[in-house]
Length: 427
Ligand code: AMP
Ligand code: MG
Image (tube, rainbow, N blue to C red; front, side):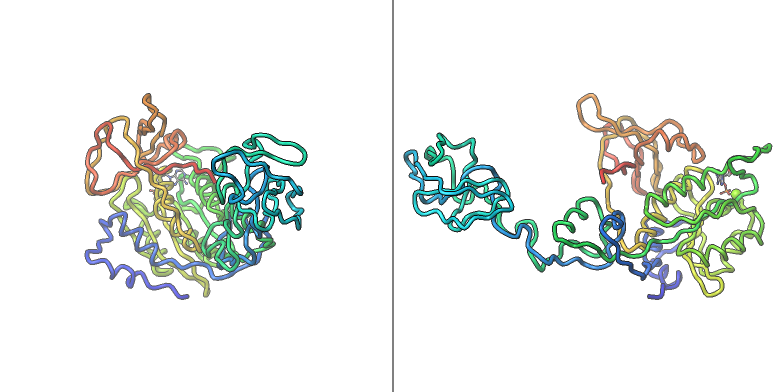
């Protein structure tokens, strides 16, 4: 599949303005521009966790394969029971899980059965052992009205029917999926190959851990947050270090990244104050656009596709401020990278009460760092971390969620519902 040009994609927007681009439009353009990796590999189940399924998996068998008992008890025919008085039934056999029996109870008879045992022919329900009024070696007595046809009976195929799609292509494989595949006896599955993402930081003021921190310099933290976010997505990461604010160094890095990766994520050098050559070089190497997005933090963003020596890669030029780079990654790069991996970002926004008022200007999206807790009344509520400056990484560490205040939203009053995206998920 060949990607469309950015111009083709942006022409769908009636009032496209790269200098005042709404978040939703930028997300849509990026989503429409990227294409998924095509290569597929076959992996054994234990290696497939977290990978993206490349084809539908059709169930080769029904699960369970037979009607079976949901309880330890006695399998019987409900029609044999007296609706008005206790009934005594003879116990003619015992069925254990994994050891079906040929015994077919006649009228007035039943079969002792364990959980998972195959239902004997003719029986339509199971009375749990603890509901039987009296039990002897040869018979049981059941009070009227304690059991009905169908009770405690699991049906063949109630989990999955043979021939149905057990899992759909595009799914990121989770623990339950592994179990389901195992229950079907499937040993390996086709998955898309891992997405290769190269990343580097730009800036003459950046120092790597282990180097002395010269006057006016800062340690490069973005490469570590990017490493963490990309690794969590399941990408194969290619750490290209720090690239100086130098045209040749930047071009060399981008060329090398093109050869090695499907996508390139850079931080720094895309804001207005930055040296012009960052833009010039990115633009010279392909189809790249520079946006000012209606958001806070993180207004500047470069996006497109560059090519060198016959290899191309999608480019995400994120801003340099440590919080801005994370927010831009989470709200622009992440969904696009997932799409390139062959899957879609799950929609996990929750609506939660704001514990306090939040000042918000309409006309732009604000991503505030939030702490979601249980309020005094037992209901969840969110409060924003103190300072929301785009350089204050500590606020990302303290937060357990992002509060997303959309363009239309104005000031939030205490008690209003706001949208929240949790950092942590169960699977
Ligand atoms: P820039 O987008 O290059 O203008 O950078 C904006 C701000 O973010 C500057 O204060 C930079 O020092 C800081 N910054 C840029 N890159 C990094 C990085 N990799 N690690 C930490 N801070 C950075
Ligand atoms: Mg810079």
